[in-house]
Image (tube, rainbow, N blue to C red; front, side, top):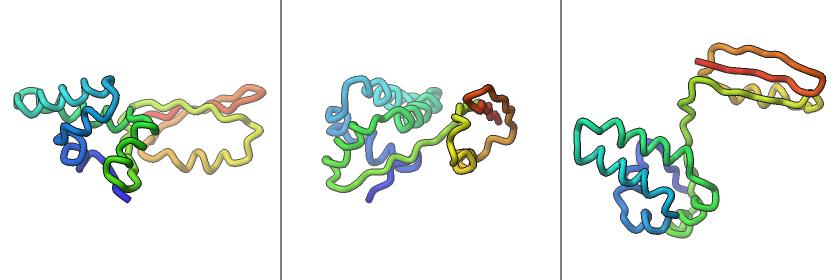
Length: 124
């Protein structure tokens, strides 16, 4: 099993031209932004943001293409860098606590409910 995350995505994905053409064309702008960040030091943050955006937007069917290419199971570790996260949970659900345990690094929250749902807004 191979993990692809922010630390190794450049080496495994972005530096490999074969993978660029293996993936659909709507990912190519991430590759171009990353390349610009490498060529121009003033755009280094644009390149880093392209890697983060790629990891957060890659679809499961495209991960399957990467699995075929590498010949092993791929796990993409996504990074949630949002400042706000909204949750809508049905009150009939029995595992509300398990869903809420998955939210880390969101120190502030607000809750409200109606007859059917519990709404929670988390922010940093």
